[in-house]
Length: 486
Image (tube, rainbow, N blue to C red; front, side, top):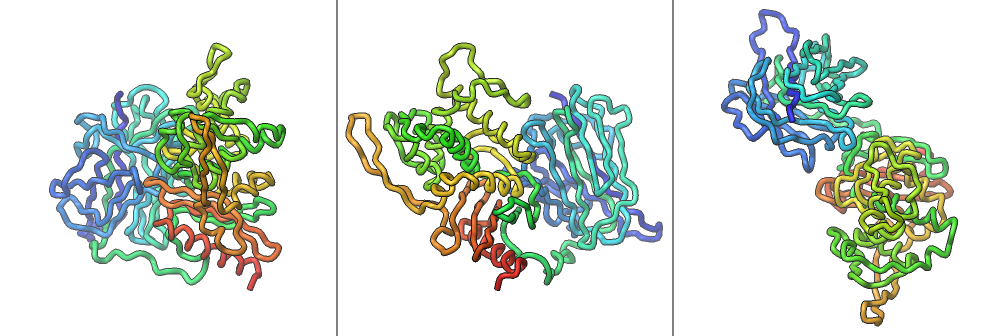
C-alpha cells in the first residue's frame, strides 16, 4: 500500500525585525531523537498522540505541546523511507484515519501565542495509493480537502488563523463520505514560541462545571433523554464494558415480546469460557438460564456471558438487513455456527445504534474488551433508551444475585455475583454500567435521583476506578445545584 504523507506547516505572520522564529518538526514514524531536529509522538494506543515540550530543529525546548483529543485514529507502521516533495525526510509511516474504524480525529496545538496570526499549510505527497483517500482538514469554520489519489495540487493553506485565548489551535481531520483513508505523516510548525519553562496550563475558571479526571462526560435529563451539559461529549472513545448496555437491551427487547425467552437454557461454549477480561466465571458445558445469565452479564460485567448471549440470540436476526459498512455474515445454509451467530448479533448491535442516531458508536464485539467505541452523548442516549425497559432497570439496580448452574456431570453449583457499580451503595443511585480497560480508562454510566428529579451521567476515560465515582458524584452535585436543588 502506498501512503499519502502530509506535512502541516504553521508559519506565523511576524515582522521582519523579529528574529525568534523557530521551526518544530514532528514525525509520526519510528522513534527519532530531537538532536536531528525531529520530535516523535507517543504510542496512541492508550492516550492518543501526545508531544510535550517540543524542541525546535536546533534542539531548543519550546512551549509548544501537541495533543490528540480523539484517541481513535491510529498509526500505520509499515511504511518505508521515500523522497518527499516537502521539507524533511520522514518515514512512510503515518498517523491515519480509516473508514469503519476511525472517521475523524482532532489535534490540539497548545502553547501558541493568543491574538497572533498563523498560516497553516498542509502538504501532501505525490504517493497516493488509489482512490478513496481524501482527507478533510478544518480549523473553526474553515475547511480544505486534500485528495491523495489525484493530488497534482498537493498544497492547501489556511490563512490568518489565530489561537484562542488559551493559545490553542484545534485541527480537525476527517473522512469525506465514501472515502476510505486519510493520512498524516509529518507536522512542521514555524513561528514564534516561548521557552518550555514559560508554558503553563490556563488558569482555572471560577465558572462552569467541576474539574474532573474524565476525558469526556455528559449529563442528561433521565425523564426526557435531553442532553443538558457535556465536555468532549461528541468525541468517539473506547467505551469498554459500557458496551454491555446494548447487549442487554437487545435481549430485553426480545424478552419484552416473549417472556418465555428468560427460561431458555444456554450451554456455555468453549469460546465463551475462554473470553478474556472481566468474567461471570462460567465454564464450558455448564448450563444456565437466560434469566440468570443476564445477571452474570450486568453485575460482574462478564465478557464470557456477553459472548454466550450473542451466540445464543444472534441467529434470530438472520433476516435483518445488514449494515452496508459491515461484512455480511449470513450463512448460505439454514444451520448457523456459534461464530456466525455471534457475528450476526454484533451486526444487530450496530443496526440498533444507527437507529438511535449514535453516530460516534461502533461495536466489534458484545462485551467491549476490544476497540468498541462510542461518545458520552451516545451512551447517554442509549442509557435513556435502555431505562425505558422496566426489566433492564431491575437488573442494573441489583447489587448482588445468587443462582445455580448445572455442571457437565449433572450436579449443580452455586454462584454469586456482585455489581461492580459502587454508586449503588449510596442512596439515590440505581444503575447503570461500569467499564474499564487500559485503552478506555475507567468509565461509568450512572442514574441518579434527587427528590423527583432524575439525571443520567456518563464519564469516559477517568484516571482510576475511584476517580470515575468521584467525577460522577461531583458532576451530579453541580448539576443538582444548576437545577435548583439545595
